[in-house]
Image (cartoon, rainbow, N blue to C red; front, side, top):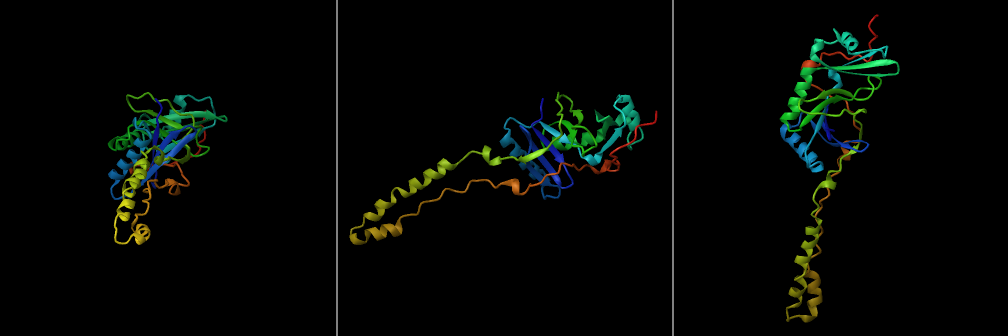
Length: 262
């Protein structure tokens, strides 16, 4: 399974992204201090369904503030070595962490997050019907190689992406909405057609008929403006660093940690 959407939480708000051929498009975002968060998220999901009527399969982007990144100065590293390096590096027992690691440039890069953070993210997304299927993160430069992947939710077989999420544009929500233009065009014809006959009918002043017709003939009714507003003005520059629940905010970040002695 390949996720078709990604849900990112940031300190600025909640962002929904849609997968496209060469990256991801911004569908929309909701500020955390909006008056009715539930209603705003429901609208965001409705927008997603106009793009993918078949449903959402959502990758949850975990906040970098909730992830411990380490770098070990060797590529001759296995999971046991990674777990040993993480022991004591976070407030959590190693068994309570979800861990991913990659190798490159003579080093091993490690990313770890508390499983309870994943549970909270999944609960939030499920509550608002975003259909979460897996967990990932967008690491800062030089802290990891590729996308940090923390696994799939139970019951889903998800193929991880090699590259992290990159936003390359804004979703064109207008392109997928029904176009009412034909109805709008037909409407002036129905209204305008009988009017000239009504004006020409009176006998008392035949010489004034042309002027009367000009004065009384209804103007052509313009088609209603149905073009949706372009959200690109609101999202010119995007930063995919996520925010997170407060209960794990005491995890300190470290871009690089020396390899354990020996």
